[in-house]
Amino acid sequence: MKKLLKKTLKLILPIVLGGFILYWVYRDFDFAEAGEVLRHGTNWWWMLFSLLFGVLAQVFRGWRWRQTLEPLDAFPKRSDCVNAIFVSYAASLIVPRIGEVSRCGVLAKYDNVSFAKSLGTVVTERLIDTLCVALITGVTLLLQAGVFATFFKETGTDTRALTDVLTSAHFYIIIICVSAVCVLAFFLIRNVAVFAKVRGILHNVWVGILSLKDVKQMPLFIFYTVAIWICYFLQFYVSFFCFGFSADLSIMAALVMFVVGSIAVVVPTPNGAGPWHFAVITMMMLYGVGKEDAGIFALLVHGIQTFLLILLGIYGLAALPFT
Image (cartoon, rainbow, N blue to C red):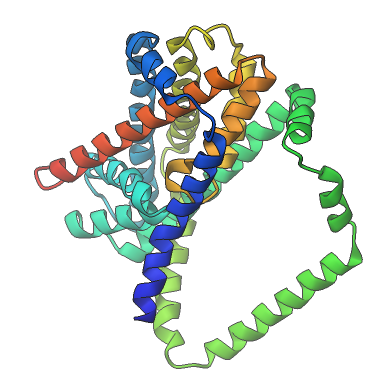
């Protein structure tokens, strides 16, 4: 009963959180106008073109993932890796972050790839993606520092409070205490017999993480990584040309909104729903787009991109038994 309650909360809480933020953002929104823009004010050719980059990003991600599996003597079909990625993104719409686990399960089922080792490669991927986001964010902050300062001011974020925390001795004392507790817990658990099995699993995960250093054709791996993030950005930027009110925004404006949106999706809601809308709408308004138009852009673009993830997930599930 307790386990069922935990699973239910994991499923419901992200949806409730995303729903609450969406309600707050769109509480006074005219949805009839959004429907009118969807029917008559959207350039669907540009929209389809933007979605092409969304598909390519996932294809490149599947190919890159296969590269990290090869050093582990795992050689799944390239198409299976791509379809597993399709399924993982669709699964994460139901339970945030569950996709990381589900794609490992797909390869374990169809290609007999070690689940624990493949999970290790996913951890490596996520670390690389985090570094990419940090790098893109750092460059964008340098280029558009004034815009970000205005964003923090408009959203009520007090950066001085964070500075006070980081310069406080109490903060570091707490960090040291927590670290000491973690070390103590590690040594206590290590002596428990059950830990032997867990340690074996963790070893396999660690082997998967280290697979990156043995990847063949590292230039190709770097190319896939760069291509993934270029496609993500182009999917977002090209969608500007779908609407008259956003078509004239600069590529730097798109980069700023892309960075803020990428950070917002870290919040565990289905496909970043809610936090992503809030971040993009706020930034669009700073670049002169009206609140109503910014809301329409965020609602339609996010909705259509989410629908694409669902379609690709269905395709991946249907294609896997045949490939």
